[in-house]
Length: 392
Image (cartoon, rainbow, N blue to C red; front, top):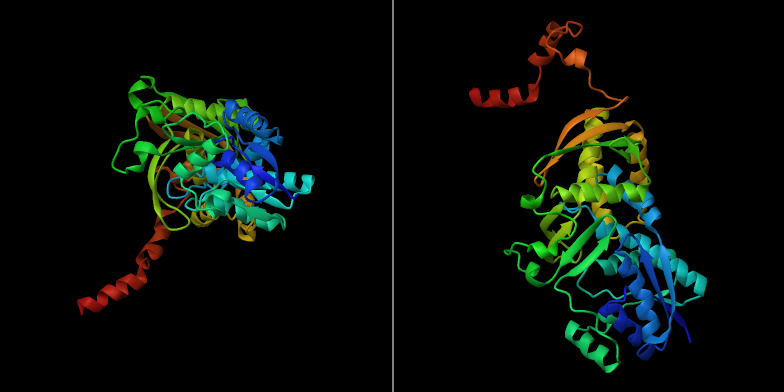
């Protein structure tokens, strides 16, 4: 009997997949869960469910540090955001897929399975990585059998699969953010209820006094909060907590999915919004005007590659090389004021600052103003010649 490794969360979709893989595909199932910062109960549950459903061999893989250092920090350096979304779920998928491939290779499996439907983005993100790394077959039972949610529930009942507690929302959570879908949120005119959020406080529940925090960067990577150097995972957690306490991090957008449909997406990404904003402020101080323009172009392309699941696309690696070269000077500290759902950059400093207080001062004479006359005279020359055509 051929082996299949199933990316397993312990929820309805993947629990149904276990039995479908056995009954419909005649395969020996091995389950695996990759920890990228989910709540502890969501890491324990897959192992428990896998055991309850048939004592399947199960892997739990701790990839939090790798996620922070090799994925999140790269996203910060690229200021990665797709249509206002800081790519929390999208950024984790290639790492999860990579770890699942490693399990499949270790087990000698002939196939890898996932519980994605045919309507979402994750099918692209998982399969693009899997197919670029190995020759395993890819099986997506929910999509391939065209199952509806009600059909899944009926099948689960017929197989004796315990139904997970009914949730009002579908949540995907990792170190970099929470994606919240379903129920009332599917109506784009409805305001997300407060019970949808758990990382961020409502503005009227946040502290009355503003808080100023200082974020230290080295080579474009956050290293310190308020002067305390921290390990990557702990730094991101602390940034999530501080920003969330002040109501920072709620994103509510109409998003364009890979397959073309628009979807209403609600996210909580307090650390992502805070750290990317601070990073941009430091870039403004240390990069030239042309570098900033190029960085903005790179950010858009980079973000779309990540969103579309093309982490293994060579262009992403090429862009990382260019980004890393520019980030050598993005070192310094940024002060951010947080208050009632708003954040504002109020200070920045760097040993690589291109800002000169002396030159910009109105009292400075080292910059001879008279030398600007010729430059200003011919500034916009082509536009002036164009306008002159209409004068005559």
